[in-house]
Amino acid sequence: MERLKPFFPKSHGKPRVDDRCVLSGIIFINRNGLRWCDAPREYGPTKTLYNRWKRWSDPSQDLRNRAGLRKW
Image (cartoon, rainbow, N blue to C red; front, side):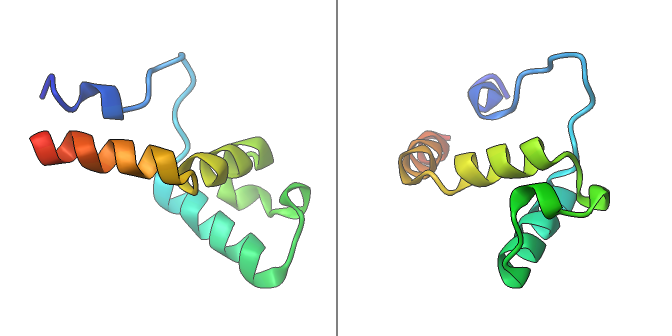
């Protein structure tokens, strides 16, 4: 479990918004051609949607995650 710890988000006191909900929001925004600020509140805060989209779409982050999981 210690080897996987770097891949989990650090706790900052606020409860994390569900990843599935955020992913649904990102898909909704992209399919409908909306701006991030126009996303329905049910998907979570707009800043969270944008930040996760940015992080998840970063190819270098994806390679680092895959390399770390290969060792496991």
